[in-house]
Length: 332
Ligand SMILES: NC(=O)C1=CN([C@@H]2O[C@H](COP(=O)(O)OP(=O)(O)OC[C@H]3O[C@@H](n4cnc5c(N)ncnc54)[C@H](OP(=O)(O)O)[C@@H]3O)[C@@H](O)[C@H]2O)C=CC1
Ligand SMILES: C/C=C/C(C)=O
Image (cartoon, rainbow, N blue to C red):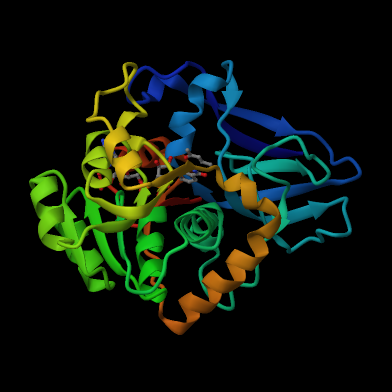
């Protein structure tokens, strides 16, 4: 019998999640049935959607998220012992996965792609859900052309830092907004043409100076007032990919922001929201391209690593508070 630990969400969050909203439950895993695998979890992801989706689930529920782990026992010949897998089984140290379970929007368990020597943690980051989000959410919705000006908010985070670098690979001029001077410095080091600290800058004036000819594509990770300011500086036929709205995830009452309709109409903008699950069946295409770019040095993924099962909650809240540069992950 294997002893496992998992985080159970006890309460619907009010504001920033609190430690008391979670309980760590220890239990014994049952014997494997046909089609099941036993996984020792090695890397766990903490992401904004764990906060954003919380109100949709009746409590208590097991905290879902992506994880990478090692198959230690198997009753499915497609996943022999020693295989590394990516699943959505969340914050636990051991788990049993039913390999035929198709219920989750987040997709079935799959083998970690061959990372050719890169860290397995990338399976929950640049070569996982955030990588697919950046790849498809930017390329399919913004349809960037070389020479165009692209703006990214949440630019130093998991998704935003990849979007900015992909935009550079595609020959665009890239401007990123992030929440500290250290993040701004890093973004300029990895090739952003301009990075701006949205907490200290006059956003409208700084953007006007950085993009005097206007903005063609906007990848929106944060929503709220800064997004209205950016959208109101867009060019004719501009495209906005609405990926997330982290500026409001902890708010019960949605903040007000300047209206967008005049810009949308007079500049004939396209604004489209998406969920990365839309491209689940095309993930291998994104992963192959992302791995190629990382190996060629064109894409430099960064990770903010927290160690220890007991520290997953702190890593989650730290990410919501902006402590991460790059992808926030926990090593078990
Ligand atoms: N549509 C989809 O399918 C998907 C959407 N997403 C969305 O993408 C966005 C980025 O996710 P991800 O890259 O994983 O997370 P990040 O790695 O970017 O981490 C979250 C970051 O959000 C920033 N942040 C926190 N509060 C605020 C605020 N009030 N205003 C502006 N920025 C804030 C912080 O950076 P800073 O210091 O710069 O403030 C923090 O580091 C989220 O909105 C998420 O929901 C992610 C995956 C899939
Ligand atoms: C899959 C993730 C969705 C958001 C909104 O973060």
